[in-house]
Amino acid sequence: MGTSVDDYRASIRTLLAPLAQREPVTRPLDRALGLALARDLAAPVSLPPFDNSQMDGFAVRSEDFGAVPEFAVVAPIPAGAVPVPLAAGQAAPIMTGAMLPDGADAVIPVERAQPPRFPEPSELSDHARVVLPVTEAGTFVRRVGSDVGVGDVVLAAGTRLGPAQLGLAAALGLTEVPVRAPVRVAVVSTGAELAVPGEPLSPGRIYDSNGALLVAALREAGIEASATAVRSDEPGELRAALADSAQSADLLVTTGGVSKGAFEATKLALADADVEFVHLAMQPGGPQGIGTVAGVPFLGFPGNPVSCWVSWEVLLRPVLAELLGAPIARPRLRLPLASPLDSPSGKLQVRRARLGDDGRVGLVGGSGSHLLGALAASNALVLVPEDVTELEAGADVEVWLL
Image 1 (cartoon, one colour):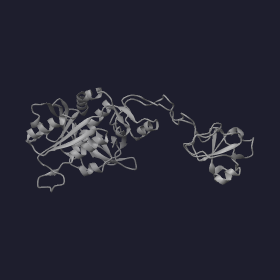
Image 2 (tube, one colour):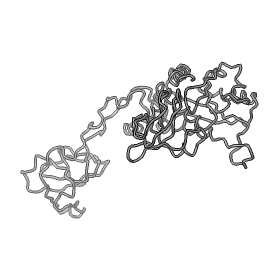
Image 3 (cartoon, helix red, strand yellow):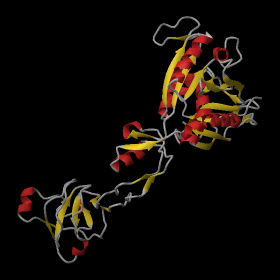
Image 4 (tube, one colour):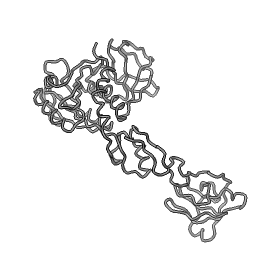
């Protein structure tokens, strides 16, 4: 039936394990998106760094309630200012995020005051006063360190750096972070049938979608990727392209030329290389190649676009997530099918699908590996195990969310 997907993933893991042993690199925050943190990140400052107001309102001393019938309004406190201490019986207009003055321990929203507004500057000079409702200490106050304390480990080593994590780093005053060295992948599309994008499509030719598809998927996952197209079945041209790409890549990925046809360019070009061509018990994405070329790890994906993309999602992405922490693994759920399906015996079938508002997952398109339109309309994958040949509507299946 072919090599199992689990066994093949183990082979990829062994091939790529050295990538996890490389020295960390330091990246500015705007170039760290999608990468994994190399070391624990401890907070150099507290968040918030000082007691501040959660609302636009009046800063007061809660102990003054009952002691004074109304409060004397003093100078307002804008965000960014260092206020003077608050004396007994005083209320300071304070803006959201502004530092709480010494002595104050509560904030009362301006709309709860009488009158429910801030005094005009001219009113302050006339000794403006305000009546405020009784409020407990701590009300609408963000205490120093209530989010993060100085010295706290806020991000553990291996954490993937998304927008929230980079925002936290910026809030802590950091300009760069240590990350696990990103993987550089060179994608080489092959085939004499590949037409040049933008040029008229002549009979028998197709535009190369695999390069754009894979490079976009890799870059979205925080991986550095480049694309080259070899529009020929001449083995020497592919060997030359791979040798050139190997000079600056950590991983070579070809698309096409790995099946059982008479003109499989990748197989022909790498006949003498340290590469093994296998067939997986998986549909789509059965034919695969694995090994090294010019001393660089090599994976040969099938040429049909859906097979190529499924190879990335089901085979390569999970291994990189495990080894490097980036990209993150796809969320996996058990959800009911919206309609029945058939699946070939002895193969892991991977179907494109869409999650509905009712919590059911509906198949999109057929099982064919050329259905790029169906792929573009999908937001999930359904994985049907090798020993399952039929499933009824409503049956639970493994779903990977995209």
